[in-house]
Length: 192
Image (cartoon, rainbow, N blue to C red; front, side):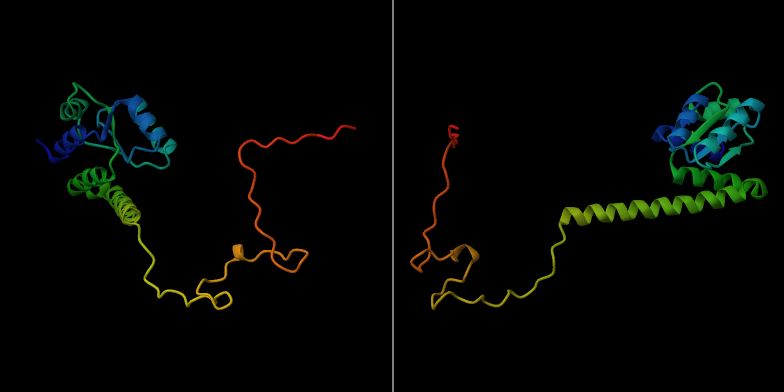
């Protein structure tokens, strides 16, 4: 079996392959498709639809491969397949590189473009994993010495706090702290 067809079988088993026009269109619209593959003997209408899906999905590369519909279908477990889409960037890049090895003029630029895209996606995934690990570990701030002792209140060892300072009452001393209401508070209105 050809290595390209073998790679398509691996992609199907991994769940990274959409088979048929409707699933390929849905993957392209949701921007999940990384590469659209069209059989060499597919109808012109299918080729036109693949190009439309590629434009609609945000400049997704698409390739017309030198395999017949029966060969593509046999690789992915169907009787025939005219169009399919790879949803994994690494698998799409590998497939394009394998095709470029056999025909560099036709598939070389697409293989280079997909390789760059796959590297970017891989870098983003690494950064995301590092970020998640950082959140799990809960990066603490570096150690710092404790602050100097605050000023104390009139010779006592207790530090001065804002709660301790009360406004003076009529006699010049500090007013005692009044407790707040407890339970349900009802307010009576004055009669006019």
